[in-house]
Image 1 (cartoon, rainbow, N blue to C red):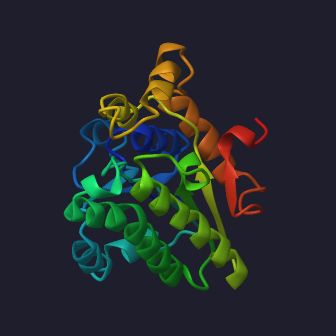
Image 2 (image 1 turned 60 degrees about the vertical axis):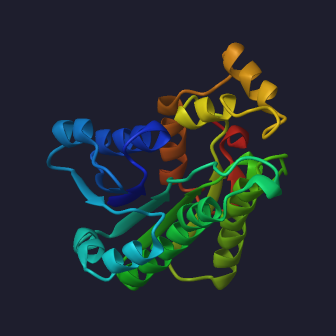
Image 3 (image 1 turned 135 degrees about the horizontal axis):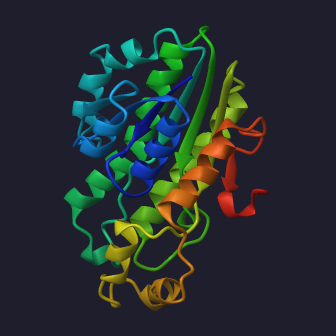
Length: 244
């Protein structure tokens, strides 16, 4: 079994990588930078590709280079975890920068869909494939100031629903909301001016009251579910609603 994971250098992505590697699952981490700590601790299991996932042309060039196929070779089970994402731009529609919108759509939507298609094609006829999109409650509930983030995460949910309808042999997929996690993204949210994100107080309260999940706990539950026999039975799910 091998895993491909995006955004493995910090936050939830780093915790997922740690969890997979600790279970002796080889990981190909794809991000703009390398994770030096994991590289030191798991030199035999971790491979890394430095790719700007917000640049669709750069990702397409990397996918055409053969590194992905080389990593997957010889494995009967492949895991793809599309974790990388950004919450920006935050604010009403008339304050959003077009370039930032394009970057968000490229990172949050184009990259996961491109990777899913490439991995499925490379894995055709060779074994099982499990695709996990890291979604959000924002995919299922609209929030003021988060129109781009909500839309991009909803796209992942609908992608999973449609892939299930394709009934591609040996492919399982789920777009999974991980809950509210104590990461740098949450710090960014709490630092956003209230006029751009009117619900800021809600997230400040979650932090103040100790209701944020640690990346490590979330990663453990996420990987448990990814490896479970039930994975893929629901194309869209919330980790908080899955039995422990």
